[in-house]
Length: 461
Image (tube, rainbow, N blue to C red; front, side, top):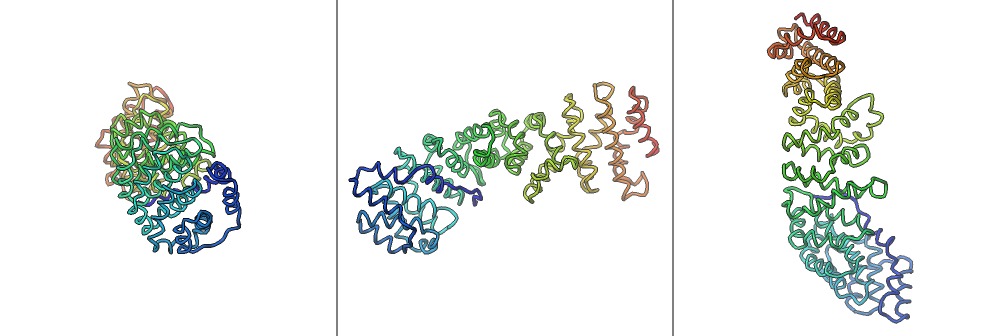
């Protein structure tokens, strides 16, 4: 389980916290403070791993600070070398816990945070040398910058594998992590919590429920460029967390975020939001209906409608987006719920459903249409037409239904020489479609009756 999410937490530390100010807060004489500040202001310089290890072991105050700062600055040049130096990680851990200055602790933690995740050998060394015990010790303190770096490390390790994720969840409760969250580092905490919730199999819900509630709160925040990534991280995590289980879907619905997720489709993480909705389609009938009533079909209509493609095309430019959209629209539970909407009392829902179905029939292949028919489309269309005299169904919807029915049967004619060998027409006849059309010939609205007459003439019924 690799986490593809990017995090600029290391840069954020330097933006949010001026190291020189931190040095001034140390319980040191001014002369030593000035020397450390001078080191921080030095031009970047390289140092080998062994030289840094020797300097750190020497316990020389100035040389230790100089070595750790150089090591962090030039880290990118010898990451692979560090993987072979098992001695360095324990020394850095010791500095994080017992370093003589806060700067030493921060620099050591920063190096570990850069190394953690994405390099399996180094990650293994970090785990085996007791990062979880060290994390608990730091989390019990109140040094916010250091805690933030530990959170970054835990997030990277959790994103590396399910095994590491579960070990972290067992050692550090969500409650403890969330209790340390500060507004200035909120996006990093949300990213870490997201990594602790992803992967298959999903963690037990009672272990991650607190994070679920935090994610819901984040998604409900006002959307802007500043919190875009944080909201997308929360969405991305929820896609893993609900996992198609009715009790988790119920928690999602009860949180009130579903309408907001629908509104975020054009702006947020399109693929992750679709994956959440795909999970809902494995829920109960009522849960699926709730999603549709929140406006899901209206937004999908915009996405698949060629007339609206200029507005929505940027959402489906990637293979992942197209593939996910196809999976959602091919989901049997979604199709059945979509078709049931044709007889729903909600006129807007029915209209959106007809538009989505109409576009699918118009643009779909024979195989695509066959899949829709196989899930009962003709039956549901006839049902809508049949109850027209019982329910107040808009004439425009009845005409659209007849138009779709005509196009379906025409698709069946492409491979058939006549109606008798047209499989779609045979289904129509078996469902007593002929009598439904006959009744519409005398419908009170002339436009509907004309469409019924066109149907009768074209297919000679």
